Figure 1 (cartoon, helix red, strand yellow):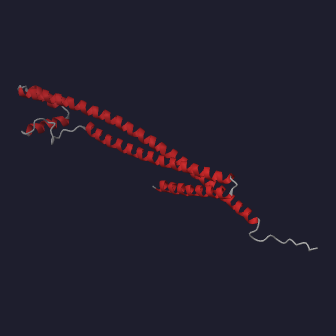
Figure 2 (tube, rainbow, N blue to C red):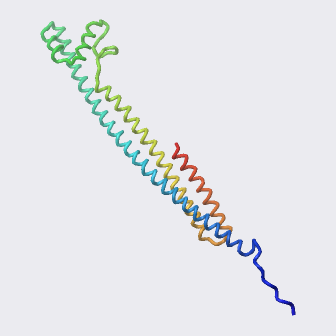
Figure 3 (tube, rainbow, N blue to C red):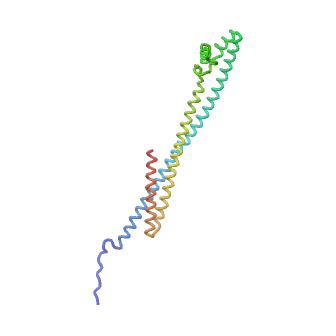
Length: 218
């Protein structure tokens, strides 16, 4: 009768090794899920902040456009008044009514309009005081030009913020895909399938982290 075999310690790399590998994989998956959750939260938070900037930029741009429209209307109203005064002045001057011309020039015209009329009188080639080269100015028209440029800047900033928000939203979607892959890897028991899902999730996670860093540093 053969003697019973003595059982010694299990060799290294024996049955305990697959369990150790499985435990390490579980830890890696848990860490990956945590990082994906952090990426999702960070991208969502930054997207909300940038979205506030976008909305504020659009609101400021709309307000600037409205103010520009008011300035343009004011400029046209003042220009119409000045043109009407000039026509009355020219008519009175042609009729030789010096009292009326002096009254219109000194009492009804603004200082800038008066200066422009004097310029017109001194320049025989000028047909009206509103030609190019005339000192005639419309502050409301200059304000309209400035407000138009301001509105354009606000809209450009808002559009840029909108694009940044889209990037953060895309990163959030990528992080959700990571959670999906790593979540499947954590519940599937077939090793090759687990590794496949874990690898796919890791690749997408690395991509989402790189994109997050790029957007943050842009």
